[in-house]
Length: 110
Image 1 (cartoon, rainbow, N blue to C red):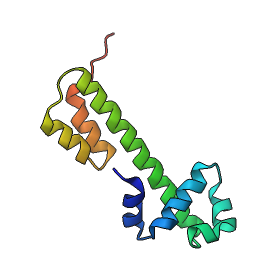
Image 2: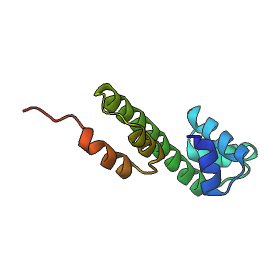
Image 3: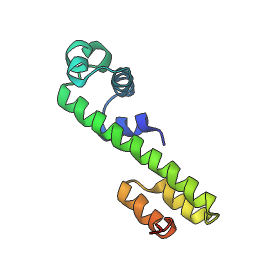
Image 4: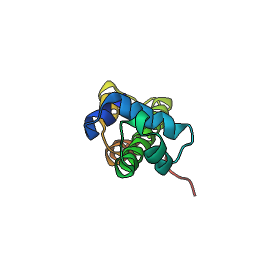
């Protein structure tokens, strides 16, 4: 999944605004710093939009990471099917991923 493209569509922003905001944030800059001193790079995005953008970015990155872990666990257990893989890849929320993963989740031993 292309996170930058998805964020661009969700927030109705230009691609350069999202790309630059994400790059600045990943480089360790804070949201207030980006909003105040990097307006030329982000196209004058205010701190509220930046905060929502970064929150959504974090969620989507966690979603991708969880998706990869789930695919690895199910594949390792040799229970992966084409339909299940398609459903996992099309899941848009953590809840959907967890619901798909629940039947294949390894049971805890006490």
